[in-house]
Image 1 (cartoon, one colour):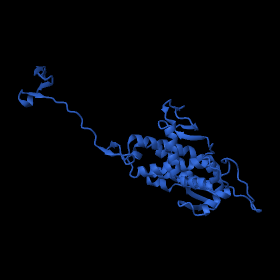
Image 2 (cartoon, one colour; image 1 turned 90 degrees about the vertical axis):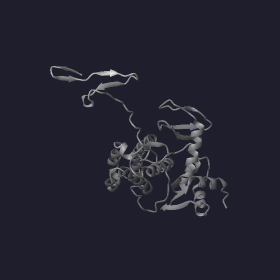
Image 3 (cartoon, helix red, strand yellow; image 1 turned 60 degrees about the vertical axis):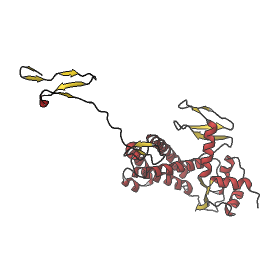
Image 4 (cartoon, helix red, strand yellow; image 1 turned 45 degrees about the vertical axis):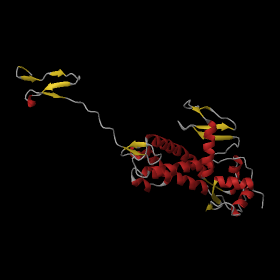
Length: 295
């Protein structure tokens, strides 16, 4: 220790092991060793959605919350389209003609209004994971819920029950995709697993490059996974809409034939959800329609 003008300075000297040793007057001149310890790793826990390890305090991992945010953005893009369908400012495929028996048509489509409200309340439910008051918002206030969700990624990742919301949103998006897409039976639309870009895959194409992120894709595997997922989900619509959906899958059945299939009791997972609107399991409807013989 040196004393210059009343100022005390402590000298450090290297030890044989290379660590710095400093003379401390509180140790009566003995040499103390400064040891730098490594920070303890943050405790981990399994992700509620996929089971991978994630940081303690979070309920889902970074990869799952990234996919969830992508789905939330997709829902936000879809809701305005559902509103246009509900107010009859847009339509899917060819219009359906029916006799009006002298009554004026409704200014909205009840079916699409129901889907619009489902989508809006789903968005409000996501924001309610962060602040329960968002559950009380009306359907048309969904944009406030979207802003709340998209700007609070970490709060969503730590919210209780978020993994169930993830599954519900994915199922809803698949169902709405079926209802809002006029499909070519020779093309399957899949999503890039890296960036979410929607890609139309012609029949027989087995590999390709994502046009958005340039990653190489196993298109055959993506199509197979898409078709398996599509068969498992529920599809909703009138017999005419279900007829068009079957046609998009390469199965030609008329509206009357689909109505007969529904009323015959051959579909075990089938329920009526509105006036002339039915909800059925996609894979089961496909299987029964393929075997349909008119009896």
